[in-house]
Image 1 (cartoon, rainbow, N blue to C red):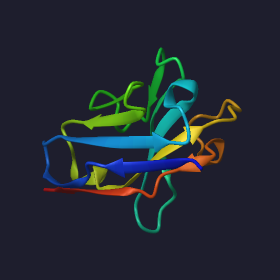
Image 2 (image 1 turned 120 degrees about the horizontal axis):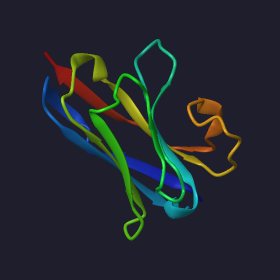
Image 3 (image 1 turned 90 degrees about the vertical axis):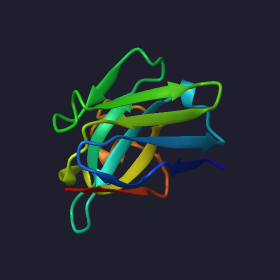
Image 4 (image 1 turned 180 degrees about the horizontal axis):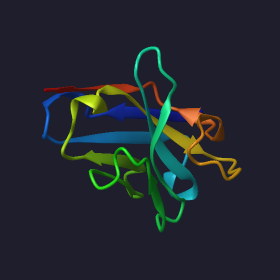
Length: 125
């Protein structure tokens, strides 16, 4: 049974930093592309960042490029999202996702087969 468990969210002031973690079980993160998405209430879940199975390539939404970094610790079977220079518009529930059947649409929600339960991030102005 695959489980993705996010942690590290919370309340932070604008300009601050947070590190989100996604601990995987039942799945080896080094074998699959992993991603982070985020969702505001009443809005579609939106792509944030993705790292390929090899770790050699990363992709980011334009809104977070230069501020967020996705990485992976294979020994801990965990994926991270480092978020710097946070803005109030980064406030959302953040979800970790695993792409076990790649179809080439990494920024699309339907590309990913497994999801975490989500973790809330609130950035105050």
